[in-house]
Length: 230
Image 1 (cartoon, one colour):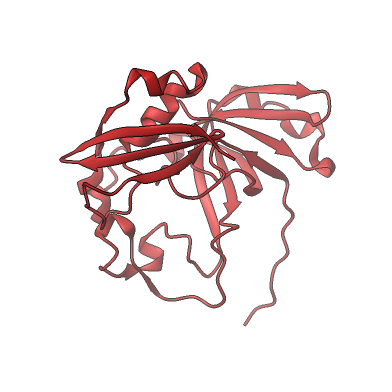
Image 2: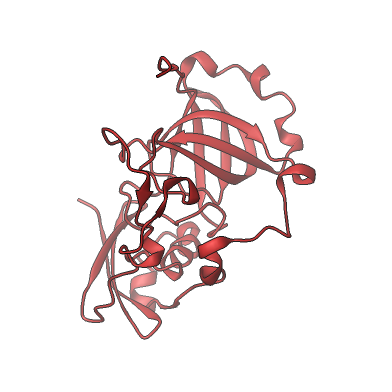
């Protein structure tokens, strides 16, 4: 076996998700989600970002930092298949991999100069946990990275999947205005595990400093309560 290869964490993601539950299953599904990428001190050199404003989208290579396991399995159980069907790990985007690496495409909203952290990236559409370590950032190249004719394998049946969201006005006002569209988009993606279909069950999801409780029945997600996180 080859010797391990060391890598440096170059940046950290700051997002609205302090816990894994509720994070969109892929990047780009909720475009209104805003996140910030803060570079580590050794990489806060503005020259390293020279020219990045010319690209609309970026690739992020990052670590499933809360899903690292000893060893690996050649098959995994994708949640979208109900948690019972096994597929090859390299035919999925499961976090439980020989190397716990993730790949996400995000939209670059802007580069800002922070008085303490230097140049930071404002991005949208990310599917990363708050505090996720990032190993690399690369520009998305539409002339080589986009393949409209590509097939989607077992995930094809979930393209366009969403729930209708009922968000009572008296609860919606408890969400900061700049977070309402993103939160509603996240809920529409159905945060529940695919194998759970109990209409009487109330789920809780942490989002942007809030605990959002909801239930799902017959394709409709209804928000039941919104309170500040302790």
